[in-house]
Length: 191
Image (cartoon, rainbow, N blue to C red; front, side):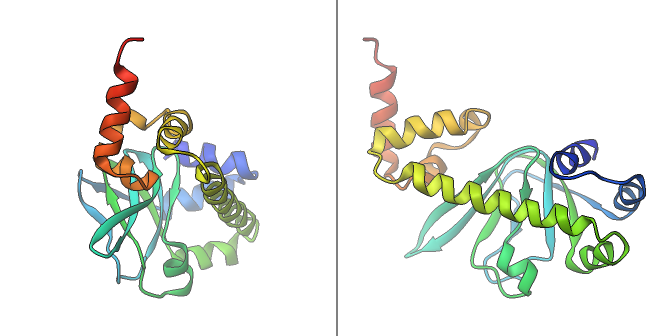
């Protein structure tokens, strides 16, 4: 749980009272590799903070999985619209590794806002951070060829790139798995 407070403090100061309250109320959940944390059509009941492990967000379009997010340690994870508006999720969240995740419900979040209004600033900054990340990813991937997308992935996700299955990397980059296999083989050839 210590890493949660480090990440929160990076965004905005955390009072000792707020820290004590969170320590008493945030729930720890363990997920095994391949566990579904959230299924499309369910209402997202938690905001998650990943202490350890790796998850991916994906949706199913025309029978194919389309990965939209890859999140490792020290990231917040949520289906925003589903959580904040209590509507069915349009995406899935799945553990790609065994995970330790800290969770908080919407009701708990509202109670924290009531008791510690300064926490609203944390949540606003988290929302802005992940919207910005999403936009940057879209911008960086536009106009890149398949090899360029893979090189971007290796650079941008250097901390998790060797932990993500190849078919999920291909889905995330919007390229065919066999194309990604070919790119990787070509890159591995001695020059």
